[in-house]
Length: 355
Length: 230
Image (cartoon, rainbow over all chains, first blue to last red):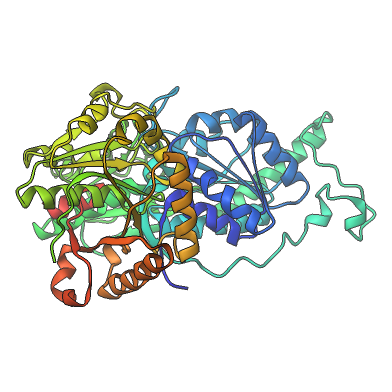
C-alpha cells in the first residue's frame, strides 16, 4: 500500500480499524480529539461504533463492558481524562479483560496545559488506579511506530487478557508523518469463550462466565493477584522492546530517553558526532516492562562514564534508570515540562556539561 | 507563470491539508514581490502547528501578523482577535486569513459574514491527495460543500499541496497536479496554483503546468529538525 500523510491521532484511529476494533468510546480532550474526529467518520464504514460518553469515568466503564463481552475495544484520552478512567483501569486489570487505552499526554498536574509532556510516566507504569496491577505500556517515537504499536496493542491485550496502554506525548498525536499500514489483523481473541460474558448461545461451552473484580474470599483474591503477577513476570521475559542509537561506538555518555524526546536526542547525537563527540542513546519502546538489562548493559559499557535520563517531565523515568544501573554509574537528569520541547542545542549544552 | 493574487484570500481545507504552510509561504512570496501583506491566524480549532509559530520570521520581513492576545496563545479557546474584522474593513494589497481545518475550522468565518459579504473574497481550498478523506474527487467535493455550508462562503479556487513532507518526490507533485485538474473539471473551480518544496523545483518540468507554482520553504518544523537546519 502506498504511503499516506497522517496525523498521529488519525493514524492511531486507522490502526484500530485495521486491528479489527469495532468499539471505540471516548470523550474529547486536547491534544487527542482528532482520534474521535477520525473514527466518527470511519467506524460506520466498517460497521463499528463510536460513542461519546458523558465523561471519562463513563467511558472507562463502557470499555470494561465491551471488553468483558470479549469485544475488541479502545479508548483514547489525554492526561486528566486518563486520571478519571483510572478506577475502571484497575477493575479491568482485576477482571482480566483485554482493552487498549491511548494516552496522548499533555502537561500537568491538574489541568496543566495542552502542549506535549511525558509527565504521566509514573501514572502509566506504576499504577494510576488502585491495587496490585500493571499496565503494559508502549511508547512510540513517531506516527509509523504509533500505528504498529496500536495494532500490536490489541494482540498483546488479548495475549495477556489485560489493559495495554499506548503512551505518546502531545506531539505524537498532532504531528504529521508519512505512514504505511501493515496487513490487517485477522485474528480473533482465541480463548474468549473461556472467560468472556458473550452470551451462552454464542459459544459451545456450557460454562457460565462471570467477569468480576470482587473476590471476598482472601484465598481467591490472593490467587487472582498471583495470576496477575505471573502475567507481569511473563511480560518482563517476552515483551521488552528498546532501541540503541550510536551504541556501537565508545561513547562517554549514555542518554536514556523515549518518545519524541528521544528524536531530539538523536539529532543532538548526530550533531555532536560531527564534532567528534560520541554519545549513545538507549530508547525504551516498552516503559513497562522496562528494558532493565539493556539499560544496565549500555550504562556499564567500559567507555561510558555517565548516564543521563532526558524527559519531558521533572524526573520520573530516571528512577527506573537508577534502579537498573544499580549504582554502577553516575545518573543525571534533564527535563522540561512546560510544553516547550528542549532543543537539540540545549541537549548538547547539557551533555557537554557532563564530559 | 507567477502568482498574482491580491485582495482578501481565505485559505481553507481539511485538517492537515497544509493550509498554514501554504498561507505562510504565499505571504512571504507575495511580500518578496513587493506588495503589502497581512496575515491572520483564524485557526481556533487546533492548538498545534499554527501560524503563530512563524510569527517572528514573518514580522522580520515586514508582514503584519494578527494573532490572539499573547496570554491566550497556548489556549485551546475560540478567540477571534478584534483586529481581524479591522483587517477585512481596511485590507492591505494582500490580506490572508488562515482558517482552521474542515467545516468546524471555518465556522468562525460566518461570524465575520457582515464584513466579508461587502468584499470580494478569494476562498481557496487546499488539497493534498495523500491525506485521508481527500484521496478522491468525491471526498474533495464533500469537504468543499461542508466548508461552504459552515462558512456561508463559496469556494472560488483550489490549490494542490500534494506532499509527504520529507518524503515528497517530483512524482507526488505530478500526481497532485493531475488530481487537482480532475477536481477542477468536476467542480468548475479555477486552479489558483500548486505547491512544491523549493528543493524539488529544479527537478520539475515547470512549463508543463498550466498554473503557477508556489515554492514551499517549510516554516513549521518538528523540534528535532530545527537543529539541523540552522
